[in-house]
Length: 418
Image (tube, rainbow, N blue to C red; front, side, top):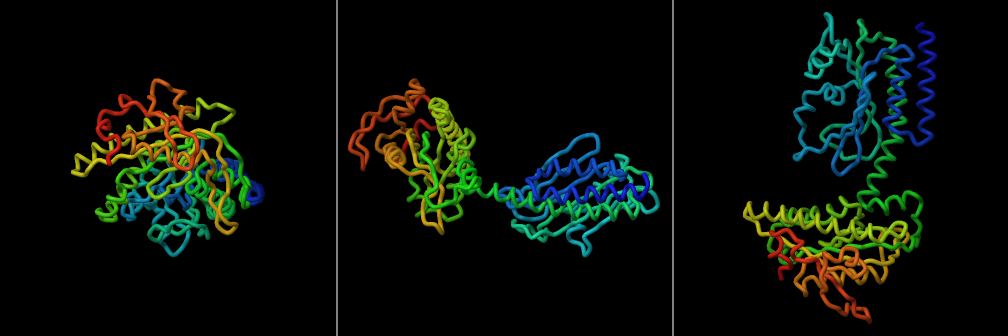
């Protein structure tokens, strides 16, 4: 292909990339189409990688790799436990790129100028690659700063062309990398926003906020099965445990409860001290489905607790326990608070009764209590626990306890310690 034709095609790709920033682009599709257009323009890239820093509770970098003719892969790089560089990072050419004085590196993979300073370059050469280049562009995006790794986008390209990349091709790829980084900023910020709303509000509340329900008082009446769980003896634990040990215990308990809720399609709305409040929305009137999901979460929480207590006892720590209350009914799901500081949560009589129901697990010495509307969906799993007058309510409520035989054997002696 003539240089003039190739340059015209690169101009078209550059313009196309800028136009993508005005829409809602997908990073995977964007990289795939850009690479295919680059190849069609006469630059024979065989592999392209792009990674970018993000703001996520588990990961600090996300990565896409495109291979000509063999699809794409997506990966995330988690935070290391001690926030120290991993062996893989220390052996990566990208480290030299982001820590170096110039946001560009090149490594010839064959011939007299061959540079194999990093193990991955040997892998590229063994796969038939002849040249490797990479660019970095810093972006002012939010994110946890890990060591000296700057916020931004890194792109790398390899080729199997006998002579590698020529100077013009490198310049054209640099130009496209800059445009790609510009569009990426839009994608990264959108992804961070969605991650933060899911993490801090829950998936259902987060989607409602992102759809525009952000005004004071915005919300809806919603039928749902709701969950409240509470750690037993938490006041005792916090008064006698070192702070780091109590926080560890608390997170183990949250993994048993909130983790089980999320695994089975529930949405954790809030952590109130050591309490977990969650919701299983009733969709299209399917009460059975919401109740089944809630019960599956209860079972999963008990399974996780049995495993946790086995580990705690094996390491010389005492076992823990918690109570769970389930209720069903209509809740008001929306923004509450003041205009300058709101939370998206649930309120109403169904919610008020829920905390009282969970509190009864201590009095009745059981692990889990539910109302009749939930228990009737799986009658063999529940047994009557009597009618009880809940504080603040005029009429007694019939409660049902999860049968002891349904609990893991390791938990049957730990139903509700005083």
